[in-house]
Structures are given as structure tokens and as C-alpha cells.
Image 1 (tube, rainbow over the protein chains, first blue to last red):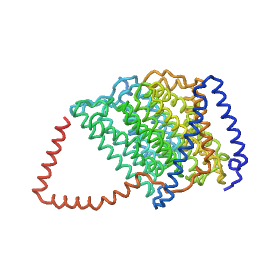
Image 2 (tube, each protein chain N blue to C red):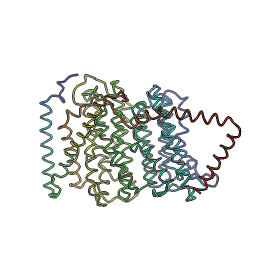
Image 3 (cartoon, rainbow over the protein chains, first blue to last red):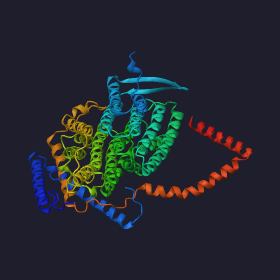
Image 4 (cartoon, each protein chain N blue to C red):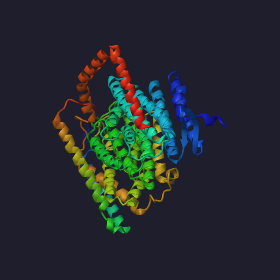
Length: 75
Length: 536
């Protein structure tokens, strides 16, 4: 396993995140520009919240499974 | 009357499965691709109406019904079968190809069935075809899963038959039209359909089947079986509110299990379960626009999940590995497979210019028109949650992230062509959604490329991906214990074996006596008669 791969290096990931943040900011500004103030940021906030909450739920369930240490592995 | 008016597309494919067992080489490859294309032409040339009537006892069977609903599903199934056959024509074993054609023919038979008896016969054949497709892998694990698949689906068939008998008895009609779940018979039919649709709590068969079947078998299973059940729910039980609840549970269940899964095909199968949940919700809403959405999402699911399973098959075929934790960095040597997987993923995320977006806006519109505000937010969150499975997690950890050091090349030309065709269809439908909308059962009054709609869709996908990267470290795949309901069943069945064996021994001992055997026979017949009288 090559941990220095371009999509795994911390510096590259930070650059990707920065670029992503700029794109997301543009999306929010576009929403404001097109005159949708009532919904401003709602879609963005909900999508972010949903993905984080669902990931946390899944991680918690996975943690429970790991602790169960059952012998049943059927992958 | 032309010759084609005697040909049933489903029966054509089932009949075409037999020669596959003897044909070989390029003739076999040509045969398995040509037959679904012939079925596609047959479906295309028939105008709407009822065809191929058959008298059975007191009932007139209608083997082939073409209407707005059956036509679009049949066309997509036939097209998908042709592409799937192209994908697997070169390296698949002949048993697998024959089983795939049997599965596909049965699915077409169900979709085109005009009555419940025809539907039931093809339903049984679908169960058999699916089991044979899994067993075609010729491994002990596949044989076990294939056997369990058959038992489970035969139980579903028995439940469905009981429901059909009850419905026919009370109404005197065998026609397959919409029904409300207001009687025990209708509930039994609904249960039979839901089992094949991989609804919770019996969704476990789908990941097991997809992960134990051959790669090509998983492609066919993922594209046809659950979608066939979705069609029957759309035709039989539109507007059933129970489906909304089940659908919402399935969305979350599918996402959570897909995050936990490490095996590629298991992850994709749970992803399919989650996506089926959306179709169930749309079916449960039951308005014209919601049914349009359910049909559009159902057919897009065939194309998208078929494409995703094809890319997974290409990866596993090239690397010999099937776990996310063992993969990464494959984009360098498999650029075409990576591109196709990304197209499938953005379709699942309903990004504009993809087929997923064209179908998802219909659901959003239906939810808005029905003023289901809370439900709308749940569905929005569920769509964002797709980043956690096939929508982003699968392509990221397979093709990017850390470099696994593996350098497989893209698959052979037939597999590449099949993937490209499905990816092209996903993009084509996204760019020209009117091509899809024209085939939907009801008129569509929604604008998928309104600026507000585009912005909402882009924000949903973009910010969900941001959430994914925020928790990237926690979402790393790793091998772990994964328990589903089948764990419970696999432990309950051996526990039930001793009392059942004892019961069987008692019956055998009793039935050895002539008088007891006759009494049991009479009692059984009386019970059957009472049941018949009750239903009729």
C-alpha cells in the first residue's frame, strides 16, 4: 500500500477541501442571486447534516457490532 | 395475423435459455445477445392492448398486456438483458447464461401478465431462475445461499398463491389491477410482492444473493428481481400508506448497512435496498405524479445499479479482490471503469444531467404537490445519504483514496462496451428527460432544469460530499462482523429441527395405521373444502 498516493496525501486533501469549499460557496451565492432567500442555505445545511448524522449512526452501529465479536462473518 | 402476434417475449427468452446449454463459442454469444434484442423488438412493435388469450378451467388467461406501465418496464428489462448478456457473453459459464435468460424471461412474463394466474406461474419461474443463477457459481457457499434463496422465495410464492386464491374467490376475477390492502387475501399478496422487493425485515436475501452469485449473476439479479416486484406493487398496490413507512425504514437501513459493508457487492446490494425504499415511498403516496416518479425511478434503478454492479464486476475480475479495504487508486489503470462508476454514482446522487436527477425531480414534485413537507425533507436527507454508499463511498475507496498498488487494466471490449452503453443511457436520459417522460403512465408537468431545482440538487450533492470528507477517517472500510436478520433465521431453523423431526416421526408413525391415515385424509379434505367455501 502506497500511503503517499496523491489522493491520500494530507496536503492534497486540504487543497481538495479548499476547492470544494469555494465551489460550495459559489452554489450558496448563486441561490441568493437567483432570488431564493426563503430557502437560502437550507438545502446545503440539510444535506450536510444528513450525511453527517447518517454516518454517525452507521459508525455507532458498526462499533456495537465490533464489540459483539460474534463469530458470524458472511461477507 | 402475423407470426409475431403468437410470440410472447418472456416465453421467447425462457425458450432461448435451453439451447444455451448446448451452444458454444461465438454462436452462443450471438444467441444470448440476439434473443433479448428480438424480445425488445417484439415489445416495441405491439400497440397497447391484450394479446395471447388462453382458456384455463373457467378463466380466460391474458398472457400479454401492453399498456403504459407494462411497456416501459418491459422495454427497459429487455434492453438491460441485452446489455447484461453483452457484458457476460465471453467468459460466463453456460449454466449462468441459461439461468440469466430464464430470470429475464420470467421478469418479462410478470411485467406483461394480464392476470394473476399467469403472474404466479412466472413468479415461480423467477424464483427458480434466481436460485439457479446463484448456484451457477458452483461454490459451497453459493449452493447454500441459492438453496436458502429458493426456500424463501417459494415461501413467498405460497403466500402469494394464498392471496390470489382468496382474491379470486371473493371477487371472481383473476385480472391484475390495483387493489387496496383491505382483506387478508390482499395483505398476503402484498407480503408476497414485498418479499421479492427486498423489503425490511426480509431484505437480507438480496445482499447474500448478490455477494454469493457470480459477478455476472449479480448484475442480472440487481437489475431485474427487485424491480419486477416494484412493478407488481405499482400495478397492484398504489397509494398504500404502509409502503411509505416501509420505504423510509429501508432508506435508512440500506444506508447504515452499506456503510458497514466491506465487500463490494454487499455494499452495492444494500445501496439497492436503500434506493428501492424511495420507489416504495413514491408508490405509497399514490398520486399520478408520484406514480410517474416511482416508474421513472424503478426503471432508472435497473440501469444505474446494473452499471454499478458491472463496474464492481470489472474491478473484481481485474484485481481478484472484492473488498473495499483491499482496493484503492485503481483510477490510474482502469480509467474507463472509473468513469462509468462515477457516472453511476452521480446518477444515484441525482446530480443534474443524469438520469437519476430526471427521475428524482418527479418525486420532489409529487411530494411538494401533496404537501408532504416532513416526508420531503426525509427524502432529501436520504438522497444526500447516498454519498455514504454507492453514491460516493464505493467509487472513492475503490478508485481513489490510498494506492493499493494494484494495476489491473480495464476489462475486455464486450464488458467495456456494456458499461459504456449503460453510462450513456444514464447521461442521455438526464440530458433529454422528455425521452423518459414520454413513456410514463401519466402526463408530466415538471421542469427538471429550473435554476432553483438545479441549485437544490447541486447543493444536496456538494454538501453531502463535504460531510463525507469531514468524517472520512470514520468511514474507512474495514472487515467486521455484519449481522442481519438472516443470522437470526440461520440460528432459529436448527433449533426448530428437533421438534419438527419429532412431529414428522409422530405423523409417520400415525399414518402407518390405515384408519388414522384415512381419517387424516378426510380431515384434510374437509379443511380444504372449508377454506374454499370461506374464500368463494
